[in-house]
Image (cartoon, rainbow, N blue to C red):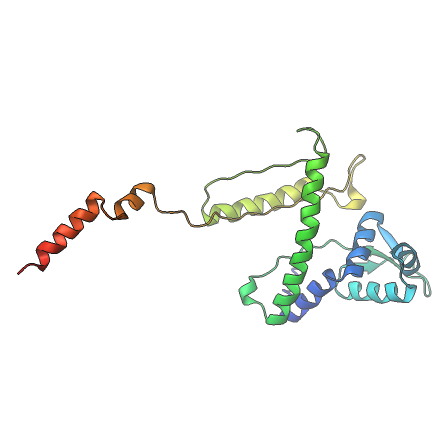
Length: 215
C-alpha cells in the first residue's frame, strides 16, 4: 500500500530530526553497526542513556528506526534503522518553518558531500577501484532529464542491497547525484556584433529611420 504524502508539519519535523547533530550520529551508527540500544549509544557518543533513549524514541516516531522486538525486554530496547527514501518538494511551495528546516539540513548535507568529494579524489585508484569520480554534460530536454533521474534510481535499486541481503564482499558505498542546467546562454557572437554602434546593420537601421522621418 502506498504511504500517504507527509504533511508540511511532518516534513518540518523530519528535516529538524535529520538536522539534529546527535540524531544524525545515532543514524550513522545504526547504519554502520546495524543495531544498538541507548546504553551502547550513550557510551559510544558520550551522552547519557536518558538522552540517547529520548532521541531514539523521536527517531522511531518518524519511522526512521524501529525496535527489535526479539532482542528487547523490559527497559532494554534495541533498535535498527529502517529503509528511508524521501523527495523534497519544491521550496517555493513550502511553509516558512518547513523551508527554514529544509535549508538548514541542506547546508549540513553540503558540508558532508564536500568531504565525500575530497575523499573520492584522495582514494581514487583508477577505473577499477572502489572510489570513482565522474563528470559529464549533455544537452537534454526537461523530460529527458527526468527520465534519466528515474533510470538512475532504477539502477540503484537493481545493483544496491539492503544490509541484511548484501552478498559477501559488499561494502556500504556513498553515491551522490545532482543535475544543474547551465545558465541562460549569451547571444551568439554575430548577434552581439550586429548590435554594436557603427556596425553595418546599425547604419542601415539609422538610414532607414532617417528616411521614414523625413517630410
